[in-house]
Structure formats: C-alpha cells, structure tokens
Image (cartoon, rainbow, N blue to C red; front, side, top):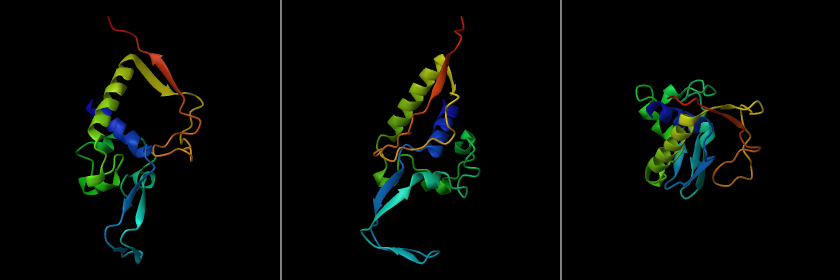
Length: 152
C-alpha cells in the first residue's frame, strides 16, 4: 500500500482534482522580488497545477515518478507547494479519509485487473473550463481493464 500511496500522490501532483485554492489576504504583503503588494482582504487565487508542475520544486515535472514522494526524497521544507487538499487551518478535513478510500478502491480494482491507457487516451488531458470546484476532463479518460488470471 505504501507504493500505491506514492503513485496516488504523484497522480494528484500531475493532475490535481482542484484547479486552484482561494484565500483571503489577512494583512498586506509585499513580494520583494517583484515589488508587488497584495493588500489586506484581497482574495488570492492559488493555481495548484502551476505549483505542482514547477521544476523549481519538482524536477522533471512531466515525468511520472512516484518516488519523489518517498519520505527520504520529499523536501518537507517545501510542503506548501504540494496542496491537493489545501494546507493549514483551511485544509480539507477529509484528506485522510479521501486518501484511504481512494487507496482501498484502487487496491480492490488492481487486485482484479491490470489497467492501461486506451489507444485514444491523450497524454495531457484537457480540463473542461466549465467544470466547477472539481476539475473534470473534457472527453473523459479512456482506459482498458484486463482481468488478472486467478491464482489457485
């Protein structure tokens, strides 16, 4: 289950279910490198996909490499750049439950099937701009499920 969790997190990094987080600035903050100030009470949109695919934090971001989330490799100093469930006091309270349910579901499916992309599956799916809070993929994500041989 440990490796499956790494795979799941890498999938969330590459294709976050939330496109962005919304926060409100609680005090004026100036970015010195840009000489730009965000005033108090201004709403800020945090683009998750941009952060999750920034080579500064995730080298070779287009490469699917679950090992980047292994404890010995993941940089805990940058824990606020991987935010599939948000972070801090406004983080999703269902993060652990959602993660455990997803892993249990994946384990159940993968115990019965091997899964691979269908020939028409695109490498970089297009997000439907009309999707609401959770991003949905335009045209879906075609997959092929092959039953595993039962071991006697």
